[in-house]
Length: 431
Image 1 (cartoon, rainbow, N blue to C red):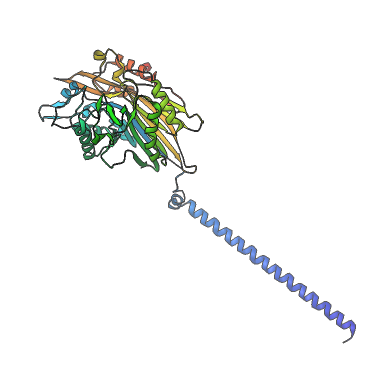
Image 2 (image 1 turned 180 degrees about the vertical axis):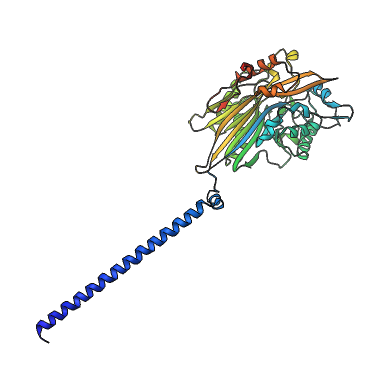
C-alpha cells in the first residue's frame, strides 16, 4: 500500500471513532435525562399522594414540638368544730363535705394536676374529732377532696403531729386507700418526693414545713416528734435559713433531672400579709438553685404572687408566698380580720419545647376565692366561692356581694401581675 493510501485510511478510521464517541455520548445524555424526568415525576406523584393522605401526614408529624400541662394549687384545708357540726348528717350518722367544694370543682378537676395543703390529721375514731389546737378530722374529708378534683395533698405542716404517730401513719393510709397521693410525710422506706410525667413533661415535687430541730430532735408546735416518725416528716429549721436551705436541697437533688421542680413550703407568720425576711431569703436561695415553682401555706391569708430571678439571671421562679385559706372557720367576726376568709386557686400552665428540651411557665391564672358561711335550714353552710365570673355568681344563692367585692380587692392587690401572671377582670365594675 502506498504512503498516500495509508494516510487516507488512518483519517477515515479516526473519523469513524470520533462519530462513535459522539453517538455514545449522546445516547448516555438522553438516557440520563430520561431517568431524571422519570424520577422527578415519581417523586411529585409520591409527594402529592402524601399531602392528600391524612394518615400519612399524621404519621410524619407525630413527633411533638411542644406539649403543655396545667397545674392548679389551693391553700389550707382546715376543719374547725363549727364546720364538723355543719357537715354532719344526722340521718346517716356520717360526715359529708362535698358542698364545700361544689363551686370550685369544675376548676380543679379540669386541670391536669391539683395540689392542696391538708392542715389536719385523720387519726380515726379511737380519739375524738377535734380542731384547734390539735386537729383530727373524719376520713370523709378525703372523699370530698377527691370529689373536688384534688390529686395530691401536702401532709406536712405544724399540725401534722397533733395526734402523734397514729395521726401521721393513719393519715397516709387513708389517703392511699382513697387514692390521693401525699407529699411531705411518708411511711418508712418510701420516697419523700413525687416524680410524675404528664403530657411528656416531668414534674418533681417536694414538701417541707417549718419546725424546730434541736440536738437531732424535731418539734412541731412545740411537740417533740417521736423517733419512729421524725425521719418520715420533712421539716426544716425555722431559725436558720441556711440550714433550712441545706435540708431542702438534699431532697431537691433527688428530683434534679425533671423538667420542672416544685417546692411546697409551710412557712411564714400567721395572719401577716407580707412575707417574712426568712421567706424572702429562702425563696431566693431556692431560685438560685433552680427551683421553678414555690407554693406557700401557713399564714392563713393571701401573700404576694410574683416571679423572682436568680442572681445569675438564669432561672425565673414563680413564688406563691401564701395561698391563704381554702376552707376554714377563721372568720372576720372571730379574728377581727377579713383576710382569713380569702384564698387563691392558682392555675399554672407549663409548656415544653421538645426541640430545645426546655420547659417554661407560659401562664399563671390567679383566681380569688372566698369562704361563704350562712345559715341553712337548721345549721351553718360553708361554700368556697371562686370570684371570676359574674354569671356564675348570679347562679349562687346567699351571697353578700359587698363582702365578695372586698375579698376580691384584697386578694388581687397581693398579686404582681405581668405578661404571665393574670387576675380575673373586676366583675364588680361590670354593668
